[in-house]
Amino acid sequence: MMNNSLTTDKQFSVFIPSKPGELGQVVQQLAGNKINIIAMSMMDSTEHRVLRLVAEDPERTRAALGALDVPKTETTVLRAVLPNRPGALADVIERLDQEHIQVHYAYCTTGARNGKTLGIFKVSNVKKAMQVLAERKPRRRTTATAIRTNNRKRRR
Image (cartoon, rainbow, N blue to C red; front, side):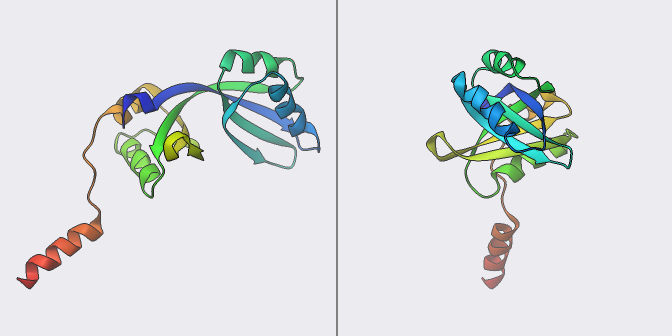
């Protein structure tokens, strides 16, 4: 993974009552302050929703959310631009797993620039994850390719 496609970012978790209009109030606040949401995810429970979002300008996002009367937290997350192809996410998770870096949660978008995918990852060790994912690794061979190669050799 190229270094310029891997960064850390601030994620805001906003705890919203599970009532109509509450989510709209949060996103309208951001829109009114001309804050662009890069990625978001929302989890629902009976009592509240947790809106997780990464926006282009963390300082302005913090100020805009601060004007609302809602509980919120900030977390450092990894932001990775990935190729939009099968196996891209699996490769990232496998590399983190091999180094014993736990992924607490992740969410991805599609349609990022140049046909890429944007992945947001909450991991147990951000610094180590950055190092692991920044290393260039040769493309792994799939099992199916290895089997076909072996079958061809046997036929000769």
